[in-house]
Length: 89
Image 1 (cartoon, one colour):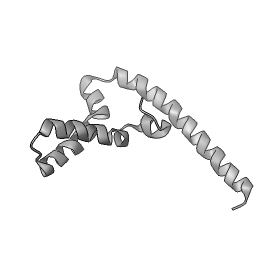
Image 2 (image 1 turned 180 degrees about the vertical axis):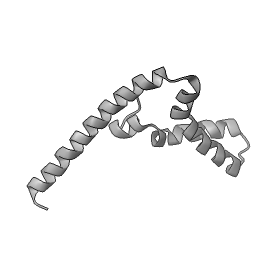
Image 3 (image 1 turned 135 degrees about the vertical axis):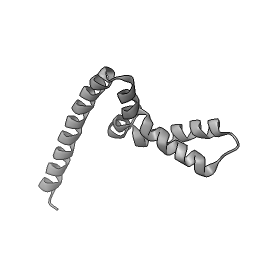
């Protein structure tokens, strides 16, 4: 691939990331207006379901500690803003 094609690819990636960030800013405002159930379904339920499934499989002696460690270890996978910016929000 020539350098101009590579540059265009990077520019399109940057544009895409900027647009995604703008969407995320709007999403934060929308999250605040959701009812409690919708807010939880959009934010924590996906990671909690996965964590609880893992908890059932592993059956550790201290399930609360296991659950807390799982959530901390995997939170980046469920936080789109973290994935986009490379840092926790």
